[in-house]
Length: 144
Image (cartoon, rainbow, N blue to C red; front, side):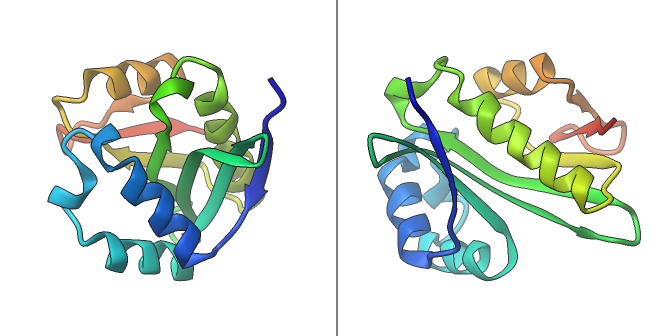
């Protein structure tokens, strides 16, 4: 499997992927945010990386690495097409987050996860994240 990682800030591409994979989020992303507004925010403010196989988007990650005061990166969303879960694409995207955050001087990456999304929680725990004390939906990983 040849996976190409592409950094792209295109609001249309972000919206198209998130809209197509809306039901992959638990609960669906559209039940929490307006997808057009959220895609626009990610396009303008976050770093967006797509995972592509044969020129088809199969994964997307959006994150921030600009908190120079607290040195914390924030993983806003990570999503894979249903048939690519368990294929290693998720860790490729997550490693991009870690690399970019380290290069930007971040010491920690944080995220929020729905407590009902056990598959996501297991994925994050497997890759070094743990729940923080101050919020039952917030996880963090120290970068090395």
